[in-house]
Length: 411
Picture 1 (cartoon, rainbow, N blue to C red):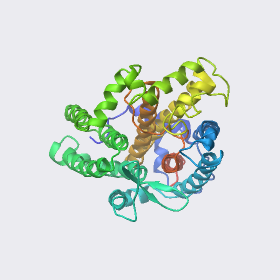
Picture 2 (cartoon, rainbow, N blue to C red):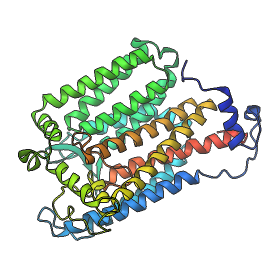
Picture 3 (cartoon, rainbow, N blue to C red):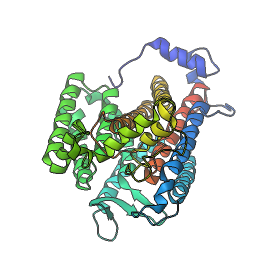
Picture 4 (spheres, rainbow, N blue to C red):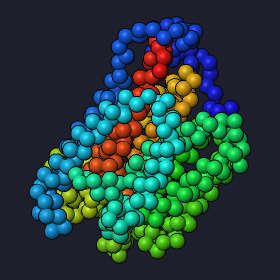
């Protein structure tokens, strides 16, 4: 069985609620003029709200970096770049939305190979760019492309296509699970060579989540999950700097940790503490004054907490939670309509945004060891903004095709 089956009444309810018909028989109508199909205004509202909040907080968190000895830039440098990234992301999303899901399915393997090529290209002298000992970027003039962000979309599409193609082997370790593990092992070799453990964790979460939703044997899945967690623990302790960061996270207030490996975390917690319920006021944060490193990227939530308080943090988390919930609902609708590939892609997008949000919030609040992952739509970072915006465009495309099908049209 490909998908963990839902009750038939749920499918009937979806057809009745969204379409113009009262039963699923309407899905068999011949293609006809169905008129305009409205987008999901809820998704658009939430995404644009998050983008506006992101612009506001990137501007506030980065404005003091203009007088930092690390950067020789104007005070509006990061804000301007962030806005440019958003414009490019929205233009790209418009193009992505017009690509039918059947075209994505056909492109799944070639796109995955392209992603692998990019992962390898960062190590080629003259092509890849190295910063602070990490080779993760390809310079493209206006911005540096972080190739792991492209690979997240490639893994998402490939995992959904793989699950559909292997629907009869989801209970087989040899034919259903092992090929995906080998593929993700190859991806892991290249990503960890950069190194970028956080990005690889995200790719594993997306691929394993889609396999689980696709009906993989639960016992096998749990065994693999335990094995993956064991592998991550091994990778943490195999590198001395990762192990040092892990132990520092366990006790960030110990003097040597607070001034060393846990410096970011300790100042992030100070920022949250200063904000209390309603914050110290927009623009009045102290931690962004060269105390909290990367305040405009991975730890931007700490600045939100300091300036807007618990209320501001909860506003962002509620919006992101709603978006994840809506992605799962769109995916379930697609699966009920027998658009299995589209449904898995939509649910995979929900997993992507949800897990990345959980990790970012967990790191900023001290729940998880420090690891660099952006907060979707909020943090500064051109490649990350473009990738997650493209993912939402794909989600809206799935929703559009769902509505066309339920109106009796053909996609």
